[in-house]
Image (cartoon, rainbow, N blue to C red; front, side, top):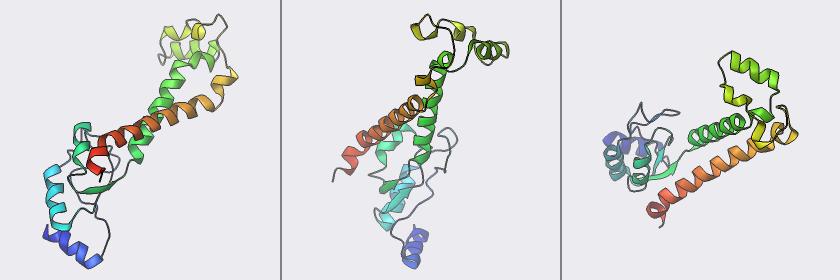
Length: 165
């Protein structure tokens, strides 16, 4: 704690990013958020902490952050991962409307996709193949934006009580 106080005093920074077990762009299974350590540092320097990122914080630990002294959290990686995964799900769910049957058969032969991808396309009797509404950017943009918006809403729900004041 003395080191944090000295750093604050000597640098005059407005916000402090402490080492509390999390890592930038890490996954929660590799690191463990140290709530007690954060509270100790916050008690020594005040509620001026910034969490480098939330992607390595377990969901059950997120609500602890306000009381632990964090006034700022960085969320880019968790939003990028969630958005990217939503895009992948959207593309996989509509791949029969993006690729033609020959390409799909090649991917099945390579073991990349299963044979279900050759089933009739999204409830239609049309052949597999590119359809503008599925190959344009809008479906992927919408999948990404929806996932990111929902994650931001999650953060607001999680932190509302802790930051209500």
